[in-house]
View 1 (cartoon, rainbow, N blue to C red):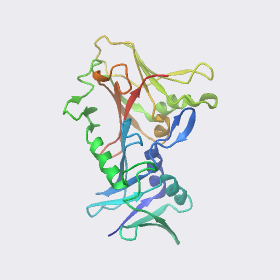
View 2 (cartoon, rainbow, N blue to C red):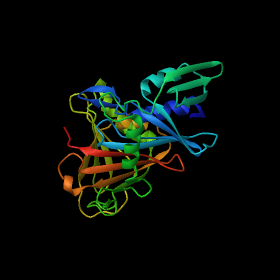
View 3 (cartoon, rainbow, N blue to C red):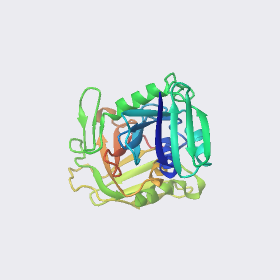
Length: 296
């Protein structure tokens, strides 16, 4: 079966870079959490839902609107995001993507130029994965279905729903945070060329701040957003996340809502907290769910 879609190069490039969610590991930066993906074309949108290679620390859904409607749901496998981005650099703005599932090839065309890439839904999800791209995509969709970005809630395997309305810090939500302000706070982790890869959100009864970096290269605290006024005596509170958040926010626009959820069974361990960032850019909201870490 052959499927085709037209899309702007800048939109597709930004989408794929968001999907990669590059982060810092052991002091080494620009490591992709997601190496490959499946572009899902449905209605008037191309979207990607993806788990990182560890399969547990986060899940995200990003999408872009296109100027035509799909006939059903179509898949465009991208076995290597880096390779695909390397191809896009040499093409013009008006792209036409064609995937031939029988020949396992992707055709990228713009103007008088066209490039062919090997592409298959049966390719490995990543270099050490036993799962195919298609299987990993289904797993990602299954996990993402537990996230409810409109309400900031998460439903676990047992059917228990966690939300800002039923955790100890009732109503721990940042509404309408400017993405530029958020990026400026997060990017300070790279001060003087050294990244810790961690971002600590601090809450008290008057403000919310983000702390990045260390005392050797520069520890920076930035005030952000407006927290909901509900408060039941848990302040001060600090929650630390990883996951290359500044790389995601670098490509974001407008405002986001940020929800914080507590999982009591994970107290004082990685995953004690979850964070849902809802991006206000589509009819079906893009979101990122990230679990907390124990600070270094």
